[in-house]
Image (cartoon, rainbow, N blue to C red; front, side):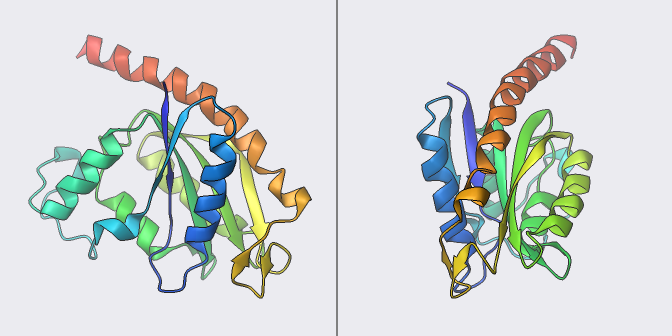
Length: 191
């Protein structure tokens, strides 16, 4: 079955991100159309990028990078759950993405965001990063407001209207993930 990682986008103490990612995982698992797994970037203890070689070489020197690469390599697709920090993607997510290249290439992704303006500016910056990594990102986005989808700005309780924004993301992501698998296979044959 197609494997899709729900990847957290923040490592901050007291972060809202873990609750949003857990909710996305629970909703996705109800579908039965893929094998979904939560991958928390905090579990990998990635310092600010500390590899000497560009990620494309896969010449990883550090154990944390090797563990991160092995985990990401398990998946066919991704849902990135990102908060908006300073009108952009969270630094921890940008850093985690910078560690790897080949492990992400020719796979598909969806994005779930949240913030004071639904995280839309983070989404647009994340799309640029994903494009550079050759990740085919779907058009639909799950978007949530800190003002209406969180109780006391900390407990994730999405409104019915915003909760409904997740299904179209997964509806697009699953077939794209399957399609990108054939792209990876074709690349292997031609190599």
